[in-house]
Length: 232
Length: 265
Picture (cartoon, rainbow over the protein chains, first blue to last red):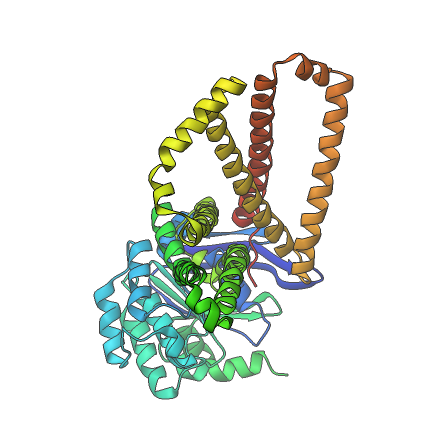
C-alpha cells in the first residue's frame, strides 16, 4: 500500500469553535511533507487526531488503512509541541522506557545522537533546559524505525545551530518507505528538504502540492507563496 | 504490556512512599525508646513530645498522600502533558486503568500494613509477638465454639469485601476524573460534581431496590428466617457483589471515555 495517511471529511470542533472543518487529505509513503499554516489553522489538531490523542467530531482518518489505535501507534512516531517527559527520570531511563514499549525503537541510534548533541544520558530531565528537553524528545522520536513520523513544531524551540543538525537528523533517519510530516511556520528553514507541502487555513486544506511543482510552475519559493496565500 | 506499565507505575510512585514508610518506622522506634526511657522523660521531656507529634503527623501524611497520589497519577500521567506519551504507546486504555488501579490498591494496602507494623514496633512486647499465632488460633477456636461460625471464612470474606470496596472506590474516582475531563473548563468542579451526583444516584437506587425488595420480595422476612450466621454471610457477600457491580460500571465508563472519547488538550 502506498498511502500512509488518509483523511476524509475530517471535522473537529471544540464547543462553538471549529478547528478542522472537513479536511480531505492523502499522504503517500516515502515523502517528507510540510504541514504549513498560520497559528490556529488546525495543524496541531490534525496531527493529534492522527496520533490518537483527539477524537474527531466527524469524518475519519486512516493510517496505513487503520483507524488510530494500538496498531497505528506501533508505526506512528509522534513529537508533540510540548514536553511530555516527567522530570524525575534520567535520559537513560526514558530510553529504556521507549525500548520497553516500542518494538521499533533503536537504542543505539538514540545514544549516538545524544553523544553528537553532548547530552549526558545520566542527566536527570529536571536539570535540563527547555531546549535540551526538546532535543531529547526529538532524539527519542527519531530513534524509532516508524512508518509515519508526525513532528509538531520540531525546531521551534531550539537554537539555529542545533536546528540544522536536527533537520539533518530527521532527513537521514527515516527508512525509504516511511513518511515524515513536519508542522511549522518556520518555512524558510525547512523548505529545502521538503518533498510536498500541505497548506492549512481556518481548518481547511488551502493547497496540496509537491515542492517541485510550485518551483517549476509558479517559479517561486514556498516561503513567498506562503506569504501570498496567508497575506493579512 | 500491563506488566511493563505496572513496573513503571510502581517505580514512579515508590519514590514517594518508600521514604515515608522508612521515616514512619524509624519514628516508631524512636518513640518506643523515648517512652520506655524515664531518663529522657525526666531530663529532656520536650523530645518525646516532638517525636510523638512527628510520628502521628507521618501517619496522617501517609494516608493523605496515598489518596492524593492516586488522583494525581491518574490525572497527571494520563490526562495532562504526560498523557501525550502514555496515550501514544501501543497499549490498551484498559491496561492503563488497571496499572493505575492495581498500583493504588497496592499502596493503600502497604500504607495500612506499614502503619500496623509501626504500632507493633511502638507498643508490642516481644514475648507477646512470639505467641501471636497460637493466640490467634485460640481466638478462632473460641469463636467457633461460642458462636458456631468459621472465623477463617469470615476473615477471608471480610478481606475480600475490603478489597472490592477499595477497588470500586478507586475506579469510582477515576470515573469522576474522566467525566470531569470531558468538560472544557472547571474540570475539578465537574469531577467533584460527578462524585456527588453519582453517590446521590447510588443512594437513591439502594433505597428503591431496598423498598422493592422488602415490599415485593419480602427480603426482610427471608433474612429473619435465616440463621444469624448465614444471614451475616449473605450480608457480606451481598455487599461484595454491590461493590463489584459499581466498580465494573465505573471501569467500563472510564475505559470507554479513554478509548473512544479521548481529547487531550
